[in-house]
Amino acid sequence: MLRQVIEAHELLDDAGVNGEQVAKYLHKAGLENVKVERVTTKEGYTDFIKIFVPGKTNITGKKKEATLGIIGRLGGVGARPGRVGLVSDADGAIAAIACALKLAEMKKKGDSLLGNVIVATHICPCAPTVPHEPVAFMGCPVSIAQMNKFEVDERMQAILSIDTTKGNRIANFRSFAITPTVKEGYILKVSDDLINIMEWTTGQPARVIAITTQDITPYENSLSHINSIMQPCTVTSSPVIGIAITTETPVPGCATGANHEIDIEAAARYCIEVAKAFSQNKCSFYTEEEFQLLVRLYGSMQILQSPGK
Image (cartoon, rainbow, N blue to C red; front, side, top):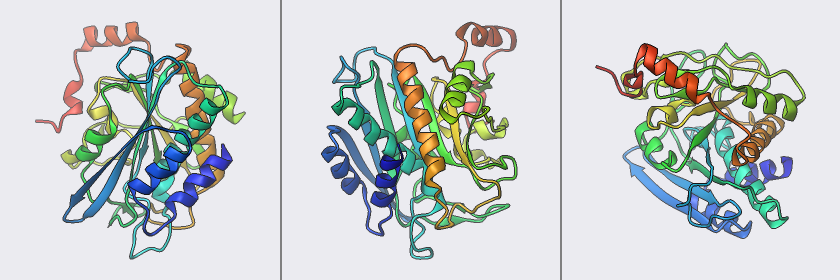
């Protein structure tokens, strides 16, 4: 998928990039169902983009075929005018757009998936920066709640959330890591199916990044969060895992020249392989019986999906 990653990188590495430009590029690639919506605040704007890639028998999205969500999480693809060029934080958007391009090419070549895939991300070339330790984060003109509203779709039966996760001292390696599955306030065991696919696609032992209770709560409660990678889990009952693109040393989200195409490619290719297996009912994000037992034993944890008391 390196070609698709490079195409997405060059498409987004533009001071004037916007959602309509990206949608036009995706249409040319053969993706017909692309929705763009601009949200403007006093801090600027971002263009949300959502791509519905139907399975072999579904062109409406209303049937009950398996539907996987791939969300590219970020604050912005650029921090202009303070920083020139594509920022490290853009990895999630690059990976998501690359996934859409790969699915389009697969379909052209006769390899449509059985199930549907919904790819969502947003495009902002002029996002603000936010002070953070150990390195600065990227901000966004819109709130996390607004991101969730536009990017998390009720049709998504499971969600992969891709995010640059370089501003920490927890994941000290280059490539990507997955999180445990999160569902309705519970951090569940890491899926064996997802581990298998990771080991097969990377040829290396699976890497799992630690997440905490704080990370799966909404941003507006003012608690510490590793980043926004797990925020989709606060507004859905579907299982969510994070795909964290990582580095050996802390890298600011607003750093330019810090998009490592090989690592983005590995993460995006992993997402495509998960989509293939999920559409064939060969990949479970969690064990339903064990989740129900947890709820019976300990009760609902949905309060963790709220801002709290």
